[in-house]
Image 1 (tube, helix red, strand yellow):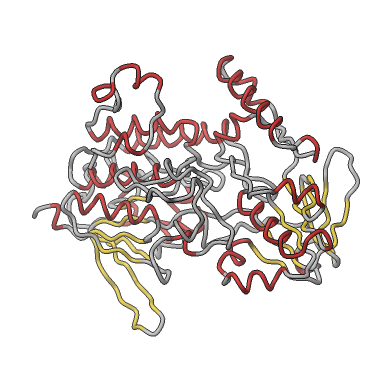
Image 2: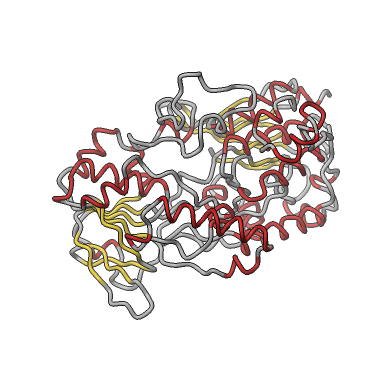
Length: 477
């Protein structure tokens, strides 16, 4: 049977799902795409009213699909299932694999299938079978990360309303605006979304009812000592430039880690327009905190280092404390055995995936869009190209032990180089931001492509000195 006639399912129609579908079509497959939302586009269909790209449009794009010429530099957002594996072998057969799926090929020996149970409102539950499953469900949505709180210090102690940023983003713009209008709002977190929420609250309420942002405390400077001298110098110079250009020191918000760690952790965000102007006028109040809890009247912030606790009065508290991408992935599966395999391969809150795409002991399945980069569309498309070529038989995967060793090496890198996402978030996160080019080189070698994309077309100087982008990989289909 021609492998292109195999049945392939894609779960999720966000940026990664669309990329996976496009490249499978280019290789002759006819995938079926399942989407839980009302439209394609993923998180970009459920955002705050003020959300913009934090990557310039020229970089945040598919390799062969540019933005319109009149697009903003940082476009606004409006410009912009249960699965079960059924095989002929017993469930624990994966424990004895030497090669993925027994032979290192995408479809294994052809005896196993994925059974998808699809539930729709007002429609009878349907069951579909597929030869290969691609999960493009992302990590930033679905299952919010709610921190643990001390006894009597959780949201139940608070008289106001507590919600996760995901809930606020899912609201209609008018409903979200009505929720914060005239309220004392406190936002816990320091990500891009936290800054956007604070800016919207400031615009709605002004300095009369300022929005308080409770961000992370200082982090270790150990990373700088571990970097090579040149890399450390570049990081230090870049950090010094931004500290001069952005009034972080004036407001006590200079991070305790270097610029390199921010890149390694994918923690670089674009501030909303005029954000520090709002801080100066008093409509946004910045408060550093290592930990927080609740009391009847609001938030209790703990600055650590012997500092006294302080209470921030609030009517509404928004938790921008991240998501449990690992839990979201586990919840996709009906089999307790598969859930256990994923947990066994995980470190902290990240699932171990070879090439950030396939689990060494879960057959006929790939995950696209789980690891983040500074440009997620770019990294998702490269992973989609890799998965499409794997399904097309262009290459075979190495032995299971070698894949697990690679996963362990990446886990050590993430733990060593990646900082946490802020108050209430995990201590590290899978981010390929600082090693994106090296990661792409590995994918190219697997696919049988020359990783030096510029050398033949633009010359050696371009290869050495010009930055790489999505367009450099456009001819890999």
